[in-house]
Image (tube, rainbow, N blue to C red; front, top):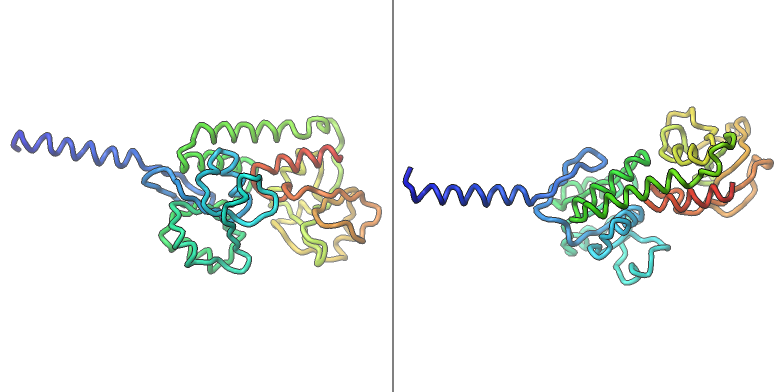
Length: 272
């Protein structure tokens, strides 16, 4: 090999190595590898908790469109809002040219979910199955947005606030609770839902924890046969079969699998 070729090959090796090194890669909540050539700069979120995660790690300025919701901070007022309730606007999403989409896997229509996976757009699928998954997602999104240290700090703060939210109830006996997702038809959570961790921190026991499900519809007969001392709901107070139970109006943040769930937990424990 000539002496002139060696420097050229060495330079090529350096450039290829630098290109590989510059890539950012994480594994999302569905176990899919997400690879970006550089940190994301144009992000679209398709669920409120995804937006909250990005705001928590200081990546709000990178959001070009956010999932519709009602209690975003003023900094999000002028950001275009997206909706998946009536189906994803696929043409608009492609035209927006995002370099990252953060979506909620179980919060989307199956057809839209499959299209998104096949679109060629890098998509981080958020599907928190536990409180630890939420903290991990914060750190992964920090890597994808080029804010790893801020994300680690946000994850630590999230975990610390979770552990401190209900310290005053640490010696209280466990109360039985029915967590109402929807009043009619009655929908609640079984033992496989991550909200059981939140209830445990508040020293509450889900009366349907033995049901090996996430969210499910429960019959009126089962409600009568499984009374609870407390009912947690985000719906307006109305007549319920269990008339002796104490009804606690939960903040909407309690049911969203993002970092603001801490606010809902703190409020719940204050009421308890």
